Amino acid sequence: MKHMIILFNELKWVGLLSVLLILIGCTSEETDESPLPIKKSLPLNIVFLVGDGMGLSQMSSAYFFGEGEPNFSRFPIVGLSKTPSGSHKITDSAAGATAFACGKKTYNGAIGVDMDTNDLETIIEELSAQGWNTGVVSTSSITHATPASFYAHVSSRMMQEEIAKQLASSEVDFIAGGGYKWFCNRSDSLNYADTLAANGFFLDTNSIDAPWKGGDQKPVYLMAPDGLTPKHLGRADFLPTATKRAIDHLSLKEEPFFLVIEGSQIDWGGHSNVGEYVIQEVLDFDKAVGVALDYAAEQGNTLVVVTADHETGGFTMASELKTGPYRSMYSDYNSIAVEFSTGGHSSTMVPVLATGPQAILFGGIYDNTKIHRLFRQVGSYNAGNKTKL
Ligand code: MG
Ligand code: ZN
Image (spheres, protein in one colour):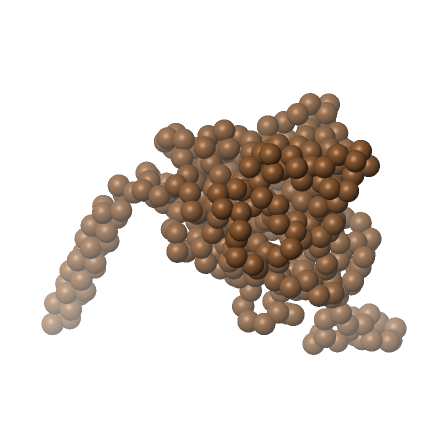
């Protein structure tokens, strides 16, 4: 009797194994031997969300100060990115974003150029040339260092009028952020709002919530003269709304899309050493992440990657210190008092979260430039490149 039970159990496992093998057999057609499947029947999209200045502590704050489980928890793959620039142990946002956009370490302040100020092709330029549609969204001016590094080439991040000029003649298909003064109220008195219109863009400076009035033209939402209002001072749902608008617009087309979304002001909260500023910006960014993840889950072939260019402020989730001679004895381990150690950036590694086709490639510890390489590698599937990843 005992032997029969063992035999039965073994048979059960053999049966189960057969079912599993059949299931694997059924799906192998779609997977191309990849660790996570790319579905050949659908365009492969990439949504890249950058929390400027969002170190691990900033991300952690969403778990203590938000409501419910943050969307960050929805990513199965986690990596760490090493952020130093080509010129400094501690990067600025220009060199940090150029590493993502162009795959090269460059000097602090550089936008889309190398150490010798030569232009580097950005991922947006490269994918546009392959027929992808592209979008750029930020809560800073759209001409600020992070978004600019994806479409512009200038030797200094300070050259925002030149950056606006380059955006007005770029291949970008969807734009949302702040910064209309760099187009319309310039030191050279030129009007690049006209250039935007001449190049097929429709500029809306009134509302991102109103129904779209621009027909087939490419949307440009610029909602402030420069950066947008900080979240803790009253900005509404601009970032999640712009993320939704961008995805709605770009997914209408048959071609794949690459969309970069920046939560710009996590960094500004860090520079100003205001905990509430940082936390509200992180929670707002997490909402935008949720919008991207919802779309990815529904569409089924979208790689979503979240990371930061660097950490800002030396932000920590410290235990509240009470008065007394021994710091650890007089810390309240049930009360978090966020603290900062600098008004600038720090050199700490930053988290990378990934989900979707080939997300597994984003695990590990690597230079920020590798993220660009992986986007190109994964994106090459749309160009018919079936090189084994
Ligand atoms: Mg930025
Ligand atoms: Zn900064």
